[in-house]
Amino acid sequence: NLVHGLIAGNTLVPPVWSPAGFTQVTVLLIRENLWWLTEHQGVLPSVSWEQFFSTVSPQRFWPVSGITALGYILSVLLSIGLARLWQLRPSLERRRDVLGFLGLSMLATLIAPTVTLTNLHLSGEFDGRNFGGMWWQWWLGDLMVVLVVVPVFLVWCYLVKELKVGKLFAFAKRGLRPPLRERLCRKRGQLAKVEKVEESSQTNLQLSNQQPSTPQASIKIKQFILAAIWLISLLTVSWGVFGSDIAPEMATYPLAWLTFPWLIWAALQFGQRLTSLGCLMVSSIAIVGTSLGTGPFVASTGDLSEALPLLQVFMILMATIALFLAATTSERNAAAELLRLSEAKYRSIFENALEGICQTTPDGHYISANPALARIYGYQSSAELVASVTDIAHQLYVDPQRRADLLLQLQEDGVVSGFEAQIYQKDGTIIWISKNVRAIHDSSNFLLYYEATVEDITERKQAQEALRHQNERLEHQFQERTATLRQLNRQLIAEVLEHKRIEDALRESEERFALAIQANTNGLFEINLKTYDHYYSPQFLSLIGYPLDQDRPTINELLALIHLEDIDEVKAILDNLCAGRSSQRCSAVLGVLADATIDRLLV
Picture 1 (cartoon, helix red, strand yellow):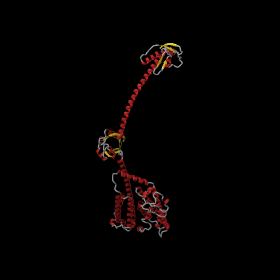
Picture 2 (tube, one colour):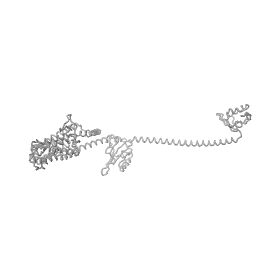
Picture 3 (cartoon, one colour):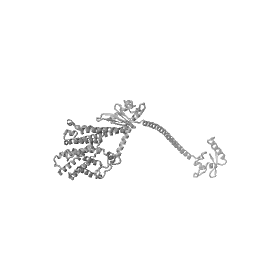
Picture 4 (cartoon, one colour):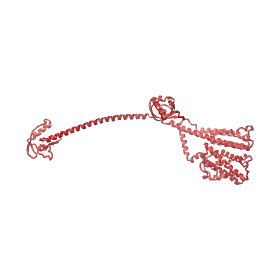
């Protein structure tokens, strides 16, 4: 009925053809990333019958309506192919999605007017005059409906539970289903990653603890109130512009664009959903008002047929600009959110790091410092450290020349790692630190500041110093032991040499003694009265008649050879010798020789 109210005498070309938009919605919502014919064969006949019954009439031969339905089916196939080729997201949250959807809509809607008008001309329903104008009006009508209707369903609708053969939709009956974006993410296996990233982001935000966030309930209430105000004001302004009679002198002003600030508000405040809904509401009110003969387009032209192209162009431009602006805002908000999350994450790392982190100027001021650095230097907070220290070289360094050495290395290399120095804490305590520093330059290689990480290595230095003292003590002890061993070694060598000299002298003496014994004709014997070791010279054994090849006689055997007359005297001599009363004594002893002969020997 609405379409017939806008026909304005042209029964062949509908200025607003809503089935074109609903056909696109039906197929695009089935499954975004799968070829729809493989799993939903029922959609093709459904679309065909829908278009057929939309165009069939008693005055029209039914094959003509069938060819018209075929034209819309080809448009749908082209839309699906382009959507898959360009990888468009149904949420239309990116500018490339909006531009792709605009291009898809413009190309897909070219087929139906061309096929249908050619079919009507060949069937004789019109003579072909003004073919271009009729084609233009038909294409604008289809494009307008697609740009206004399809985005609303794409961004608002939920995924269907299943699609049965011969039916367009079968909505789930067990409550609301997940939104299209989440269902698509789940089917791609990406939802878990998204949830992990969001959970990690929330954790980082809680750890940062810098700015307390507004409670979610308050935000939702505020958004709801703003949305209600926006909706009421948009409907009021739209009906005031398109639903009221406009004086001829006011028709020259672009009154239709008075609704655009509300669409801009929706794009900036609420995103793509309310923006698309706002475009649909403004378009609906504009169509109704124009069909009733009111609004700025009818007032400016005075003819409904001339007002229709203006209405179509207005709706197309309004939808395109609003959707593109909303997508730009969504991308900006997404980038800002990512930046905020990234800043919160790195702020959390900065605030909770165990190492000190800071930024300093070349003249020795702190730009920023984290709490760990303040704790290392003995300050209560990083703000106190930044405010108190205005000359790093003289306020912190025990030897100010060390900072000059550090800056010189940075000037030469740009990066310094493991730079060690002694630092004064706030209370004057001296500690050791290790720094990793790099110089930050701008695009023109001008030095901006230094970034550094600082680690307290006092305990490590103390352990190294204790180890050094221990090593020195052990080295000293080792040297002392070495000197002692060298002295003992020298003494041992001297003793060995002395013993060798004595042994050599003794051996020489023995050799001389042996030569003397051999040269002496007297017999010689030696008896140790403690050990009873004895020695008998060959001459002695010969004198007492003992053969040299027999065993030597013992002391008792030797005493047994003494004659009984002299035995007492010999024992007395031996006792005196043992008592030390006499060292030498000569006596003639009557001895009994081994062969039982008696001889007198001088002992």
